[in-house]
Length: 342
Image 1 (spheres, rainbow, N blue to C red):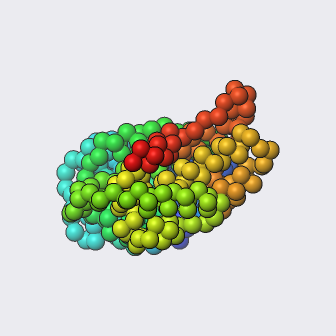
Image 2: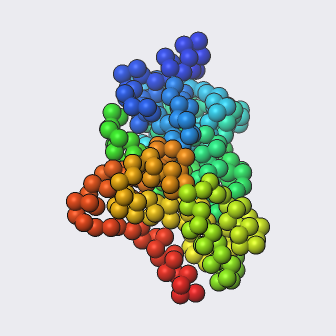
Image 3: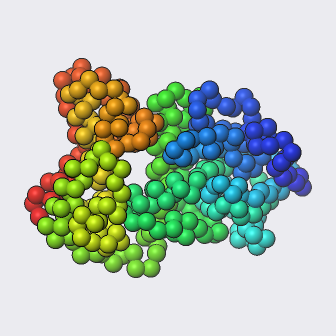
């Protein structure tokens, strides 16, 4: 049996990832881990904290392998099995799994936790290194309210999710030296994995099935008018809730019940729709469009735009101008239509 632990003396940059796996971009796409569960050196390099670092670890045994790791204090780690394997997995010194795992098997470790694994077969595992503040943001987008997201997803047990398996497979196939569009595609897949895990956790939470009553039409109109008047401002859930005369928690649940979308998701889509109009009808730079639509940086705007529209702002602007078309996002449009029919 071979035993390995991360080589702290070398540091994450030398010990964690193969040097020839780095991209020349400002963040990794999928890097090959040399040490199990070691985050890449650029994992905390994003100024906005909006990106997820991704590593892939594999073992082709001549004999068994034992590995251990203490989760970095900066990150929550989502481990996803890409192949069948046989493993004995320990969390905090307790054995939580001893036997075969299938592709799509998931284990989530919160910051600072210690885990170890003993593999008796070959394996290939993907690790997502996620900052808690990004989980908080995605939780608000998915569920429409601010809670402690780690509490919602933390579970030392191993479980399987077919949707996450498919997303992880697609992520693994992204070119490790992808261009900007490839990195945007990878970011979108990572976002989809997080959203799936948060949604799954919410569905399993006691009382999650209870549906809130819809917003009265006058409260909904106040909220929508407030959003429209403040697309360029850094407003949050509390601001929109106050415009409707409700607490943040009650407003979020009722808004979602009425429109089908969280307040944050609706706000983002309205901002992107407004950005599309500006890109199509004005000569403003992409940065000026971003600032005019409430985004704090070019990078954040480009990431959100790409996630919702499927291409970069510059690419969309060129295509729309060439075709003489104006495209709208159907989700936010349908939300407004639903309001007028209420």
